[in-house]
Image (tube, rainbow, N blue to C red):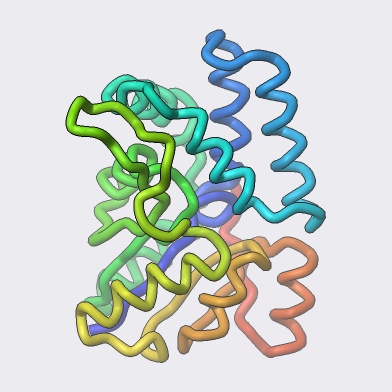
Length: 219
């Protein structure tokens, strides 16, 4: 058995779900214009390599403190139905089918929330999800802290390595599909690194190392 890991934003789907979420939350009045602007600036700086999202992710998680988990789950599912489920790249389905037919486990490895990740897994029939998770009190309220290491950058390797080890699978027998240079730690450890519509920095690295570069199209 092998494992095929898939990133979400700009990989399985053609857009960044985080940016779409910020706009949606702002339109509905759940966040202020300043909060939306600050989040958009972080995302833009990250996209061009001028910011590390770790601090932004921790800050975003902290803002959840005291909020009800069920409310965020419901809002996320509504957002997914409205704005995400029609964004899957045509080639993504083909890649999923290829690995499924080979008997591989299909696992989402993303910085998204568990509520978005679960919706994606249900839609695509994935075997597992590795993502950012949040501490929730017995009362069902967020504590404002992450649960475990962040699933971003080197953190994705931690999550992916643990998932593989628990199933007695060597990462050299696994594949990882992603668009972002921040995922290099995981790409460097798997036996089949595949870059999908890569950002310019990752594309250069992939060409230098002879990694597979694919285009999955847009919906």
